[in-house]
Image 1 (cartoon, rainbow, N blue to C red):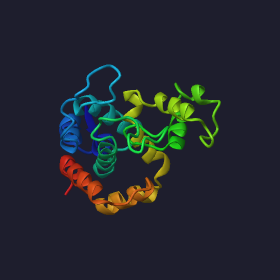
Image 2 (cartoon, rainbow, N blue to C red):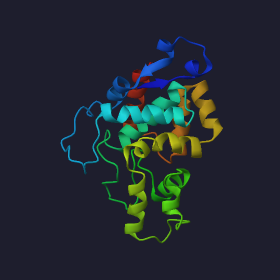
Image 3 (cartoon, rainbow, N blue to C red):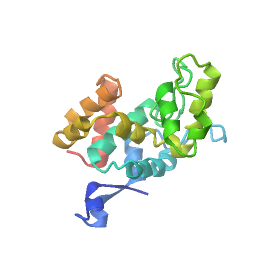
Length: 206
């Protein structure tokens, strides 16, 4: 599986130059994701090899083809999920928060509503305000299968980050990352910068 860049979409580069191998890139960004201590069916942990195909597909599905945007999204998911070990918030254990993107409950409801296969299963909900923890976690469970879990970052970016964020990435990747962090409601902390820098290197961004 490969990350497809804008060049291959527009036919401006050779296939080899415009398609980037997903597994080694994701592995560089999440170096501890080489194995999972718990390999049982109920485990949330996924290796980079398992996660990468879903992540790469999500970028194409949501029309994300520039390397700075892809790098930023993968870096955030790697950080938030403990390098793909968790699909739910473990500290402080907030009900309904999860996916690789570690989205709050209201976003997971919106995400489920955007997916044709899931929208009928959440049709009884219009908001997460006042919902019991069991309901919040049942909504989260719907978007935890790998095909949805690892697409959450791309979905959030395309749904909630304004075109000014994309423009910033195109003009200066570091400025784009700062605006992206503002879009997800996070500060540009040292740990986030560390993952961003690993992602830039993995995607070959100077």
